[in-house]
Image (cartoon, rainbow, N blue to C red):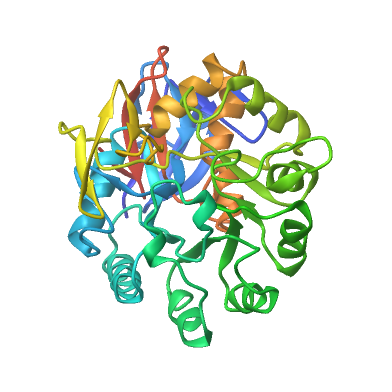
Length: 379
């Protein structure tokens, strides 16, 4: 039995931060959060120097990291590299994300994620298939030559991960509602994204089981007075989740504040949409045979389209505090608790509470990452 206590930290509870409390960890899980004076005798204690102790960040949209891009090498080694690259920025759980690709590449990526989870690779929660069932008019950096409408066999393949979470981003105007229902029926979490759909088409998708929106505002029809579009449907719907990229580039802070005001609390979550340069020294990578380079932290392809981001989750949290004016506690929930709820794993992740996996991130007063723990193992 491995047991220790984390002490001298401001611990994020379900309501707010608490000082003078210790987190008792036993065998990779939180055994208790209790006053430091109530700690059992003989338990090893680790002093955290008064830092902010948060639930580990969960990123539901990670294309690459540490120099690896999942599309280019859909294997367990890439998943390990991506996770290592992001963990230094507080991410303790991720959804490796495959950009639109051929069915064979999708199958390899799903098989790699299945193997990684079976082997216990830390932090891999499932797979996010971003496309290829999306709209050419809102393709961003995706290769429209890969786009298609899935038949029954491909739906079965895309939803075949049996030991983790599957998220599928699609354009609701491109995929029949019966197909959306089949994906949801097979256990997938379906999001609207890279879509030129109307409000009515998006509403039909929501009624068929769509429960999220991928990088809200980006690569979707905007909200206008007589045409609410995808954005209008997203902001109006009280049940769906919206991922947002808070890097000061993808979306104006005012638009993000509008989303936060429109959606019920807990329905907006932070994502990075990160590319391989996060956690790597090289600002360049290859996608679909094209070399793409981040310039001043902004990632664009040769056509000028945004091509993912160079954002990490710790920066997203800092930006949510600095650009949007939210308290650290709420920014942290947007990076951990709400993603866990969206992924339906909030019975195990996203809280520092008894029975939860001991996944934490420690920040200093400048909100820089000092340490992370996954299943109680510190790095």
